[in-house]
Length: 139
Image (cartoon, rainbow, N blue to C red; front, side, top):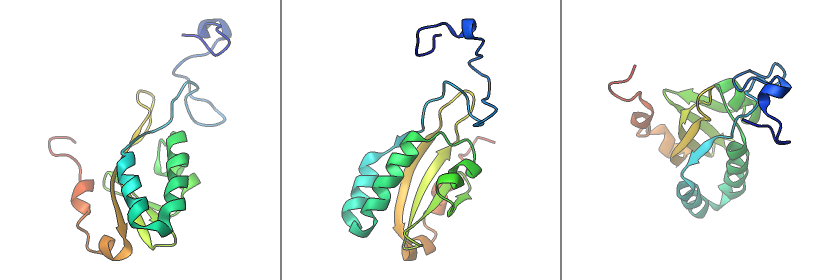
């Protein structure tokens, strides 16, 4: 493997799996994989007041590499973890964005699966909770 200048990693003494002591991430990591843009676009159309927040969220999330809730909260402090999902408070609790999350780690870049974009009233009905439960057969 080579760094951007074309020099092999071994020549500069970089370990592909070494954790950066300054930023807490791996040096050759890629940003999060987000599924699915059509869900975000549908929410943008249905709720015009959330449009700019959703655009910004997509830009930030797609360039991030979140390894824990602490990392997420560096960008979005009003985010909670419910089961295997992240629940983002949108526009001061007017809406909720719910994504199933696989955090990035040494072996994977991490994935966000957009599950729901709900009004606060829809969120309070808790119909979304089943999508955040651990998958059956997995520990």
